[in-house]
Amino acid sequence: MTALLELSNVGMAFDTPTGRFEALKGVNLKIAAGEFVSLIGHSGCGKSTVLNIVAGLLHATDGGVILDRREVTEPGPERAVVFQNHSLLPWLTAFENVELAVRQVFRKQKSKKEMRDWVAYNLELVHMAHAMDKTPQEISGGMKQRVGIARALAMQPRVLLMDEPFGALDALTRAHLQDSLMAIHAQLGTTVIMITHDVDEAVLLSDRIVMMSNGPSATIGEVLPVALPRPRDRLALADDPVYHRCRQKVLRFLYEKQNKVTALPSRPDPAAPQRQQA
Image (cartoon, rainbow, N blue to C red):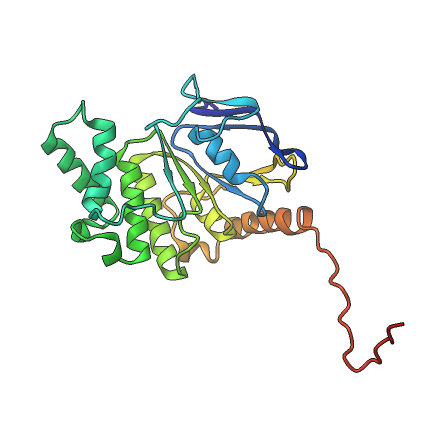
């Protein structure tokens, strides 16, 4: 596989008051252009740390990241990030929020009219053209997230990084946005790395699912190819044996191999006689 993005022996350690904490160790991963990869694992397994290193927001203490034969050392417009929180500026309209990013990236390459047309195109891509003049407080949570995705896509990134983008939304809104993301990915062919805690979401959207082991010293435990043809229909997949096998493999990794269940303390009996204090 020819890799657009490569993580090579990536490790991350932090200095804490109690000593040095190793969050990641020996993370190796190659991602091809146009591939959709999900990172999944328990809380604290380093998923967001991996994403922040790829984004250039953190510097790995060991190893590094190569994007299109260049080392990632800082943030750049070729890597756009969509967070769980939409991060829109509340005093700007949806159009102006997207326009702000477009101006930063294309002010020397596009005319004002071309930039306006490009902003409108990307809002239309996420079905938000009808609300481009509304401010964030005038639209729903799902609509805000659509604007955040439009803003990221408008930068024309080589890699779209998504940190639980639908985690704070209700199930119906999440399903609509998942379908929109699949359609956008099919149309644009953007490389996507997405963090999720939702097993069904990971199987539905991904070409491969990267399962992270528990920390400290978290690393890649398993990588699961999702051999489902595209385009994908969530209703058709409900009875698909491949879908269910993939789902079962992820669940087994998360809850059999990685989940350590600690016995709960026994509940005191309120009717039992209390021991007298000396």
